[in-house]
Image (tube, rainbow, N blue to C red; front, side, top):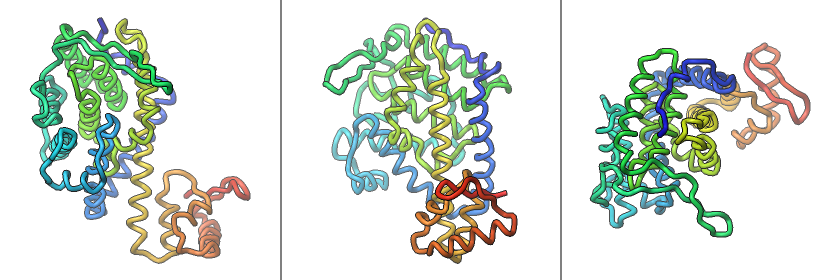
Length: 345
């Protein structure tokens, strides 16, 4: 049986993982400052992100509806089908996690509670561990079905969940352990256990969101992590497969999925940056819009990208602002000709 032990996270880690986590910590700090400065703008982003999260997490599992109907369900419409009840269940679970004063934690009771919320009365197995063995299967391009992974047996599931929760609690006591990497490891282990007959993927994403929020990475409130995963779904399954190989013998490598999750978070921060800047720039002069875009961009940006952001601004105006900012020593130019990009100093 798999040995649940996250103590290795306190030791030497892959340099790439360390580098990306450090970048995400910086982005978190910057985002916290923005939240304080523009509470109204962030509230608007939050409303849109909930809808996208509900859509994205259910779409990964093949549960879909129209955009208009999804908005109606999120706003309180009565579900009419089994699928709509599951969509509404995810919304209810997500809103509980995002509610003021939320105090849920990674315990067996709360995991089962999330599962019960998720299924929303659609199954008599809601909130209960599986009673029959299950497996994860996939279908190739030719339609052939194969077993992708064999999870923990039903008889061993209660003990495995106890071990998972205890290992997590132990890790939380060690300040050397990176919380983002711990979140990735817990997600992989939960999915390898696959404790429920149905809904494991959606519960895993709810747990991921809950842990990210508790660790201060609340970008998921404003840009949907689930929607970003759905956008890069092939990478999600590939990373899970790579990190689950050898899991039963405790010989698996969490790095592929950890790196995938960190990249998803980075993509969310970049998208938040784009939405924040666009929302802010609607109220300022053209030249100031360009300047603010350059000052707030996390990565170097090209003239063409600036023009794409502001199609109403002439190329000449963009060039004039870039030249002025370089003269003032506010930005620098990287590369030449079509490869040229600009970044703040």
